[in-house]
Image 1 (cartoon, rainbow, N blue to C red):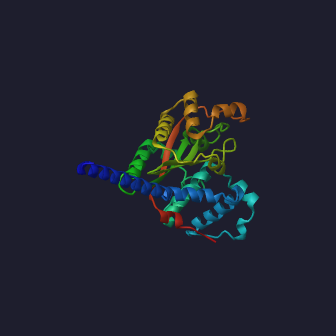
Image 2: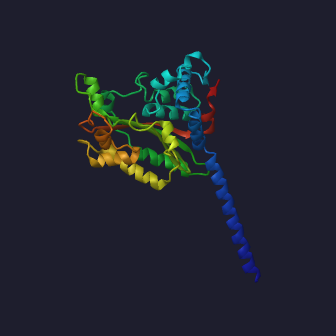
Image 3: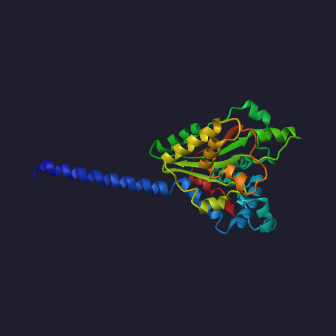
Length: 303
């Protein structure tokens, strides 16, 4: 074999080996990314079942309210599992999102409190009609594009966690005005997306006629998804953001595509007495945690 041909083959082989090594390093980095660590924490939260998870969340909530990161699991006030399971059910989309955002928040007690507050009416985290009327609806596609860019640019991709609240303006206005008919099924939903270099995950729950966060994890709903799946999801969600009028088939199909809930079918077959809200008026708000790092997930001490 001529020297130049032999040298070219060696160079090509070395290049392939270097590529394989780089791919292996990237695969290992993805496996150890903050999003994977967050996912492991969420799964481990339910390792003793949803009732025990409700006890843990009650303790976590009290610690956050006190500005602490040490969680007193052994406190006697957190031992009534059935009662807490009723008060903190994991089919609540707000509770599910609050857990994920609180775990992902940086080691800053003010920020942690804001994550806990995002979907809490008691803590004053829910917007009024005055706020909704003076604030443009947020764009998930824009926020996701920014998160994806942060994830794939540079040698070390950054992880972003986004809490999304699809709000039912019609029902909010009816509640504020009082005296108006509230006997309708609302489409309001809160969920969380985690975006990393390897892809993205979704964490959610959907009421007593849907699924709990623990069930969502068990059936693989939070598995890592690719960018093609993101395009499909965002296309459907963008239509949900922009639609208006009455609830119709396209809205129902897009909602089912995003959240795996067929509201039309549910109202017809699962005993929901209340029809879907008569006017579809969506409004979106976001809670974004940028550059989630490993130390974010090490901030709580469980005692």
